[in-house]
Image (cartoon, rainbow, N blue to C red; front, side, top):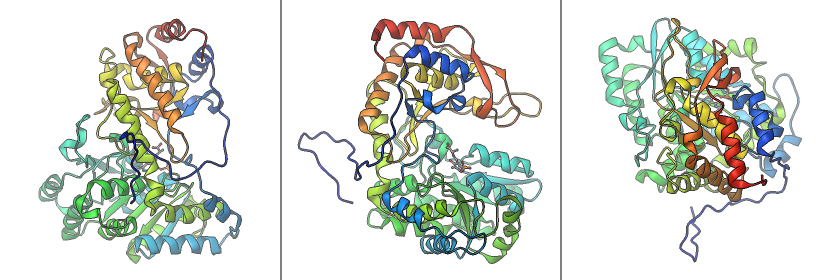
Length: 482
Ligand code: F0G
């Protein structure tokens, strides 16, 4: 892990790759951005990509591939059953995680479907450090109850705690004492905990959770979708990991777990997913669902080209110079925003920069979706597309009551190896401007509210005509420039 030092004493991220394929971007004038966001029902998921300048919606399936990945895609072995491509992927996973069995799935949530259908017993709990949206849905439809046992510091928005994704181990012990181990179908640990700002857990913490699970015979499931970021943070923030290679840390994480599943739209700079399993009995319990929902056992809904790209991408995940770009850019963006007073989640995590909308828009009540309003305002001000991660991303209770999220965040994801530092600086500049004009931003209300995963395709409108006022202010400050 060689660190580059700069003569000026200034420290900024330095890419250890160069860009050889580009995609031209469009930056629309603000009047057209207003039309675009109106047309999208003020839901950034419904924007057309051609209307977006910097797409920071997600890092899912949009990370840049390496030349080695693209080269490998050419040698893909197309076969319905038993392709050499599948064997290469399977062998790579065995090499990395040391688990003998693998079930392919077309993406992360498909793996969650299989896990939830086969492992959840009726009326049981699934404790986890924190839920992810699709994970929770699968658990709930299969009769399980999600319990979030995140260590208390995890929900402190501004902190310098290095491992805010840590599991509350005493709470797990208490739960087992109160309810009995048989009331727990499995325990889930999410690497790079998505919804609390891409925050990692420590290797020590994972091993403590593992010890409790093993003592009581409860399977421990690791969601490794955001493994690369978690590995980076273990390496730079956890003393015992400093002298371990990324491969060794990965193996230690897998050794603590019984099942490792992942979205390869994130892990391995690819598109796809799967489940690695240590025990044959668990493998057999799940296997039958793959041909039913995904595809045959040796492709699981993925194309052979995707599988080749993942195989190479997994190797790149073990290379510190390949996985440090994301977290270092995110740290830069978070610190630059914080310098300008913009409320952000700290310490910087993986995945992206997370703006604290609850504090940014203190005057907007949570029932009017401050994070949703801020995501729209950021698009208007900059053409940058972020994602609401707050109350809109929650689901109403069966009685219609709307649970308010713990945090109201706008996530500005930084897909790996995609954006340049000047693009990050542009986003920071526009968010700084918006923060100075935050009083102009108002709330949102639903026009169309779907029952399930409403944030994906619901439509909203502003409660007042604040977007037009914001546009007028932009014109005053920026003249007729973009
Ligand atoms: N687990 C985690 C931690 C995730 O972040 C995601 C996806 C999934 C599971 C589901 O994987 O999308 O391949 O089905 N996160 C994406 C995001 C959607 O934008 O954060 P998937």
